[in-house]
Length: 466
Image 1 (cartoon, rainbow, N blue to C red):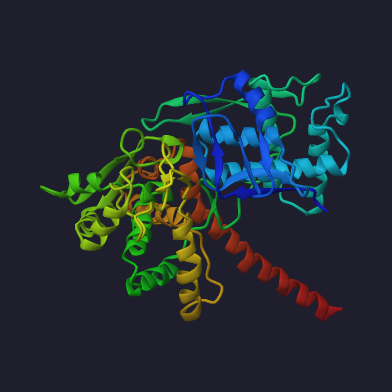
Image 2 (cartoon, rainbow, N blue to C red):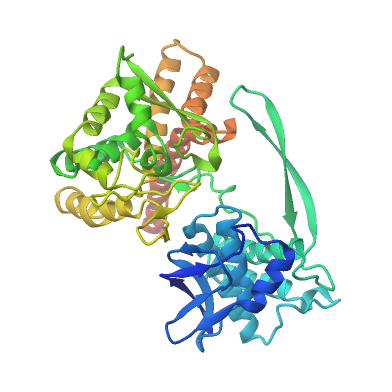
C-alpha cells in the first residue's frame, strides 16, 4: 500500500517578509518552519507578507506528515520559475512514486553510497526499467518520473540545501542542431544523465500520429465535418469561436485563450486585408509556448467574426465582470474568469488567491458535450484531443502546399518553409513530420491491405494443399 500521496490544497498560503524571493538562508529556515495544521488538512509556510495559491500540490503521508523539502521545491517552481500548476502537479506525482519506492525498500533519499547501485537514484532507475520491460508502465512515464527526481535533487544541490557524498548520477553534454525562423542553423546544448530513458517518440515512425508537442493525430477531412456540424448547432458562441480559431490557425490553446481584445480591434478597424496577422508572444499579452515570438495568421472573415463578438453585449458583460488583469481577454467565462491564466499572472479572485486555469473548461466542453453528440450521430468510437486540432490544421496546410508542388507552382523547399513558418516550428525537422505523414500512412496501409492480404492467400493455399 502506498504510504505517500499528492494532495491539492485549496488554500495554500506562503508568507514572506519584504516581498522578496528566498535566498539560500531563507530556504533552509523555511524548511524548518514549515508546519502542518492537520485539524484543517491545510499546510502552510508561515512568516509575514502573503502569496496565496489555489490547488497547490503537496506530498503527504497517510499519517499527515508533509515531505517538506519536496513541498518547498514544488512551491519555488511556481513562484520563482513561473511553472504552471499542471506542470508542478505532474512533478509531484513523480516524486510521490519515488518516495513510495524509497519507503518500500527502506532507502534514505539523502544517503548516497560510494557504490553506485546502492544510491537511491540508481535503485529507482533500475526499478523503473523493470516496470517498463514488464509493460507495467510506458517508457514515457518512467522518463517523466526520473526527470522529476533529477530536477528535485538538482534544485537542492544548486541552492545548497543538500550536498550528496557521491554523485546522484553521471552527466554529459549532448549537442543537437536546429534552424531558426530565418533559416540560420544554431546549436542546442543539453545535459544528459545516465538515468535517462530513450524517447519512444524518436523511433515511432509508422504510427498514425505526428510528434509536435506531443503525439497528435490529424483529424480526417470527413470527420472534421462532424466537429463543424456540432459547433454550428451549439449555442455556446465562445466555444464555437475557440474551436474554429484552432482549426484555421493551428494556434495552441494558451495562445487562443489569451488572445486580447486590443489586438483584434487594431487589425479590424480601418482597411482590412484578406489575411490578418497578429503578433503573439513577449510584450503582446498573448501567451505562446516557451514565450516564443509568433505571428498568428487568420482570414479576414474570421477576424471580423471575432470583432463582432467583442463588440456584442454578451462579451461586454463578461469583460465587465473580469479583474483588471483579464478584462482585455477576448474569451472569458460567464463570471468574467479567464479560461487560461497568463504566464505572468494567475487568475486572481476577490480574496486575493491565485487560481490557475489551463483551458480545462474547453477540454470539459469537448469531452462532455461535443464527443457524446458526435458519437450518437456519426461514429461511436470518435475521439480527439483539443491539441489534435493543431495537427489537423498542419495537415490541411501541408496537403494544400503539396498540391501546389505537384502542379509545379512552388518547390518542395518552398512548401516546407511555408509550413514551418505558419506552424511556428523552431526546427525544420518538426515540419518534416507533417510532410512525411501522408507517405508514412500510405505505406503502412499498403502493407496492411496488400502485403498482408497476399500473405493470407498464400497461407490459405498452403493449407488447401496439405
